[in-house]
Image 1 (cartoon, rainbow, N blue to C red):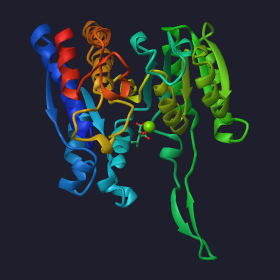
Image 2: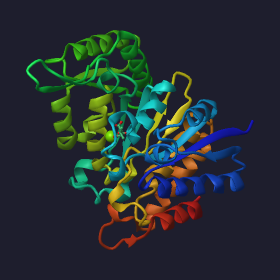
Image 3: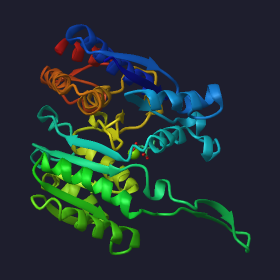
Length: 357
Ligand code: IPM
Ligand code: MG
């Protein structure tokens, strides 16, 4: 059956990078009979400019009906002064929340050709292959109450609520343990259980769920230590599981181990593996419209979409191999460029991946 893919390019470099991923998917339709139909819609600032909200209800509806969603990035200077309720990021957060995309998989995988592109020594990062499992629809991102209030003394006070219920922790724990079972069977759960009760519970529930996966070696690590260990000795990690905010921060950090945040793909899945796929990086408004952004994270996200939501493992691997071939040839966008390599534009990189398929 033909699968429906909703493409949401978003803002900044979003349209440029998603165009390259769409190019790759179009090529697979022709070469391998990939049976998908892609339609496009607005999200983020682009949606705000047209609809006055960062995600129109019609778009939300389309997303609910699609088999998978490919998203670029949202946000930009233009919309920074808007009320927080209609900022571009809210469009993205609504998609995640309304579709219950609670499991965010962010693989920090180092293509060996890029060992030089990392700011860390090649021997520290060579062979790196970490999977970050980030809880995506709970925690302090969504906890109530939240806001800015005025106290009796006239001073303003901002507040957010860090909450996780047992069921939320359990379901992300299962995703992480199952992922670990398919890999090296090592799971590190990251928390701040020495200070925050909510993550004390997180730790307890991880232990409980762990009993169902006796083959997986479960370790706990405080988030500050995890941030340090990631740059000290990143290869100690196999699967890392953590809450929404810690996952946001640690995945940006982990991306730099792989050479550039421009390489980090992601999948956000619901209970039934319906998903949204997006690069882990942002909209990079400073380089938008210049055709210099790295489209590989988005192209690799399209590969994850084929794997997790569209049941096309073979084609997913085909894209990943094509990316590797292009890197072998020495083609690099600015963010992963090093001496002796060939610097290419966003669209040249996309064309090269298509040619390598
Ligand atoms: C990410 C981004 C988002 C997040 C922003 C754009 C809301 O940083 O996907 O990591 O914080 O989750
Ligand atoms: Mg982030």
